[in-house]
Image (tube, rainbow, N blue to C red; front, side, top):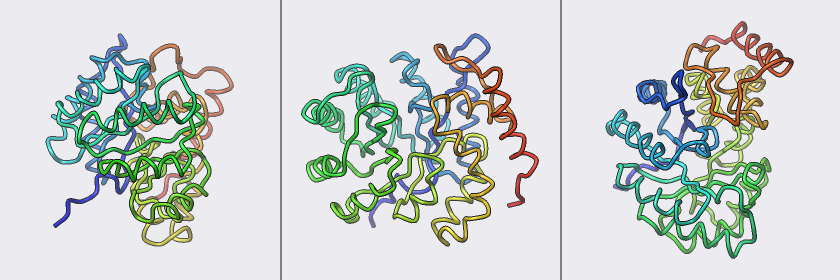
Length: 301
């Protein structure tokens, strides 16, 4: 019997909680991860964009991996984001992830430097081959200024058996059809933008690397399952309630916004590491109107 896929269902891009002195709050991180799995999520992806990985040291990233692997204790897989300024650091991080007991990797292009496919492809190959762990490629040209087009993703998928999935966050739902045309069912396709989840599932995505799930896990799982099992019509009512919140995941200050949603939902706090600052003024007022409306109209599941 083949092993079940790591890359199906709702997989939170978990936020990184901080204590009052802005150290990683490992106790809350462990508790939060288990609560997400209790709600029906199928795995945890730490150290992504939402996890503020760029503000974490190498040692902090390893400590977060170890905390999550220990806390979940086999209940669900941990698949950390692997991103760094240099290829060497990304490779070392991938190897440490395997040593920590992580089940897979979400492989990102390097921070800051964006260039052509020769260089970006070489970086991705180095990380993919650093271990034998299953890999999910992360395409987010808006955030990382590197766009892995379907043909390039197919090249990696054909070359490396441990490339199993792609998190598509270009915002172009046509990419799902293009990947299917090139690869059939060779890769699991995952939605990477919260406000495109129903569209992505309708185009064949089998997983969702989700953000607002950190505050509303039950609603997120139900939304995904409705779209998966019944299509857009079945998901329409819950999607209509969710969308104002989900759209907060796709703007530059999405980390501050999702942590604010968590705080209002009573699941965490809004502390972020500089250069991010908590929202103030008109930005905060607008976000609170959206969040408070969602709380006031929260549907019965």
